[in-house]
Image (cartoon, rainbow, N blue to C red; front, side, top):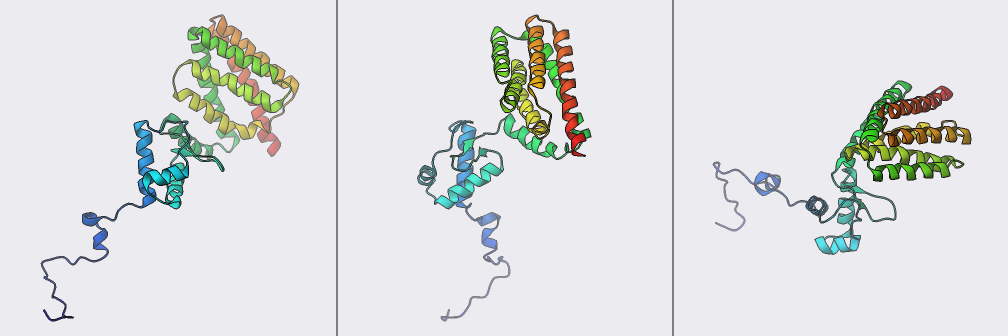
Length: 258
């Protein structure tokens, strides 16, 4: 064929264009960042990277996967968006994995937009009462000596923090969290965390004083006594009374904002 002459295309053969080259038959190779994200995900699924561990340094990941810094950072950003990694400025990312916490945290983000008024919060708080009433009954019937000790330690920390509103709140949360752990179901502590996250914005607006803290601590102590006495009815009634009082304080945050 003379030089510069284009061979006529056989009508029976499809023309291969640049666009066709990226089609199913000849897909483009994945981006470097996508390859890194997939490799990290696979390592988490295989257990090589465990939840709670920090991701290796960027330079180590660059060498391991043969990519540049930008590809590593894009991969980390993508995994953080999917909830697989927890990223904080100045710190190496922490593996979150694909467990209950990741899944329920995503659910929690959706629900948070549905509980921005008094009726939504009341429904949420009512669900908390329903769950914790069942938990204290279970604790009164099945708590082990180790569980009782955990409750005692949480109660003592709660008492010691009585004069510090922030510390008292943290220890109050910790006492209730033990109740969620006694049943041995890994979903329950995650649900407790969601309740705390949803209600925190209202807690910081609730009235706080040493007298209120003493009242709440006394309620915790009474609940613990009922659990130790193996009295599920008393434990449930005390828990319901305690949370009914707490609801009045939560509800006041709506009234004061009107």
